[in-house]
Image (cartoon, rainbow, N blue to C red; front, side):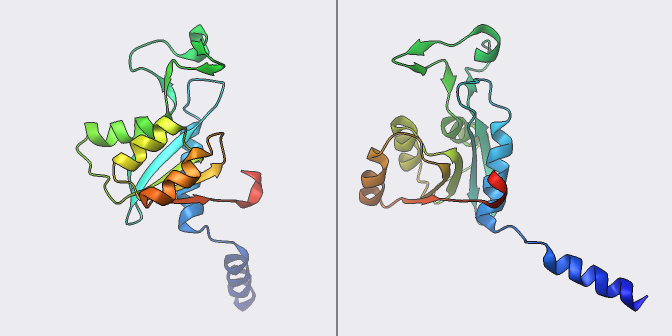
Length: 158
């Protein structure tokens, strides 16, 4: 019996508990699996005080066909048919009357310029992203706007 207790204790201590940033980024990665544009699957989670306020993923305008089903609306090499994950998370919070001022946003890819502007103007103070995606303007403007940018690296190749 004592051997069983020792085994349970060793197993419990061998497990690495996810940090809060890893936990919420894992949820953003899961949200990205709902994306309906196969050119880029992106998920977002808005969090304040370790509580999820809203989630979003990139997808078509509500009620319209998905890119995955009918093809892409391309402009200058980008599909413009979708609403981005960050915008959808902000919209969902607004639709539900959830204040996001002072919150953090976890995004699987760093925001594009337009989403970055939405994030800053919504009052979000910290952007945590998994992979850097294109727009370097956000790096200098974030400092000017008082918004913290954090790139997270997670174990397990996620």
